[in-house]
Length: 145
Image (cartoon, rainbow, N blue to C red; front, top):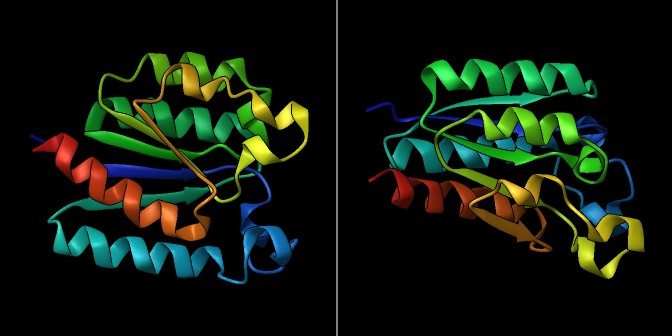
């Protein structure tokens, strides 16, 4: 069985550490990736870590994951609240999906309270900062055992 997990990040997460640090913290996406790589190595998982500001690239990676990955961890960022296309792509993936949000989307503006991705996700982590990523990866390890 595959031990590959795709970790996908949506728009503006390339600015993590610079954009609204009062909401998203000072860690960069490279810091998040490094933390995930440490967890993955200890858990004997392989990861592919991607970020894009383009919806179609996230969809293409989800399609790619169908052929080779055991699970997907996704922070869809703003696409969370708008993208039926991401939901449709995730619905074609057979493995577990964990949705991650750095901020607590339920304490923010009303439009952020709804997630299309949550309709497919097997679990959601929100509001724990970047610590949500390693927690998602640890839970993914349990799901894949």
